[in-house]
Length: 351
Image (cartoon, rainbow, N blue to C red; front, side, top):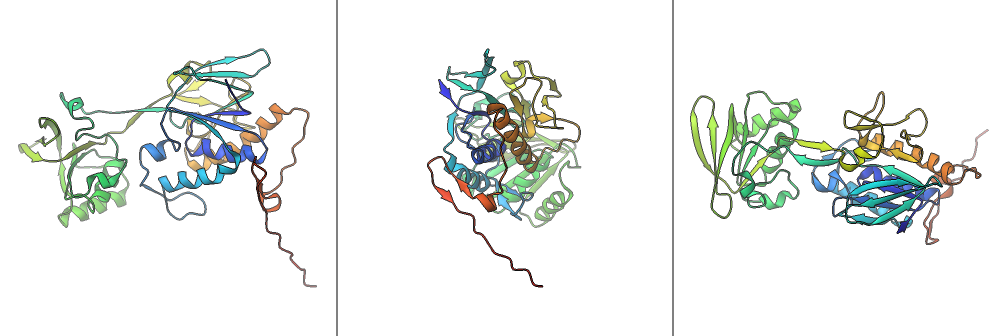
């Protein structure tokens, strides 16, 4: 039995930052995640993709943001149960909880914070009969490491931001990039559409619209695809990789069966106070929750984590009053006693 103050389900950016905010309150955290490493979507789906809306960072790669968060929470020594999915929850008579994973690992805590992002993901696969034969042998549903495609031939299918962004990125990495889309119009950002058009004119992307990939070829691994054009019949294109980017289907998974109030595949919370669910002691923060005016931004998840931790402290220590101190005044002290001292500056008034 793993015991902790706050059990965090989901080790994405919101879950990781929760460890920091809880640590400032001297609360111990343990994280559960179905993925084999911390970072959530940032590590699993697009570690090399730049993010532009993190305060203080005009631009930062998703993987670097995860590394920074892990460094930030290191003094608070969080525990991890990785590559396991939170399966069941039991509320005990003392109002604490036991959460058991699909592998039988049990966790006991007075507070549970669900920070599971959009839930677990399943790729939307195109209806190609033999596509499963080539999964991990030339077919990939997400780009984890762009260097895999260095000097390789790549066919990307899709019309959204991911298809556009990776076509642009891989134009300088792969030897050939085909972008295949069923329509002439794209759903992505206008500047990305314009960039793809420019790269197409420059011969760095082969843009194929009003078409779709219908057949995959190869014995032990992918060797070619058939592209069916709306007006011009079929063409046979030799390639090393086929990356269909038609999005991911988010699912709450077993958490959806915990008796929580669910709305459109998200957990309803009380955002007027502390992001608590309909079950006292269980909170939901980040993209997994919903309320009026909700913004699915990493920034919003960080804010919700800070508010939630204050409420969790009061739940765990109802007779104590916590006086918040800014880190610029109090510094950051880990559980091992080490402390980053705040630098004090004396400002003299001029009379």
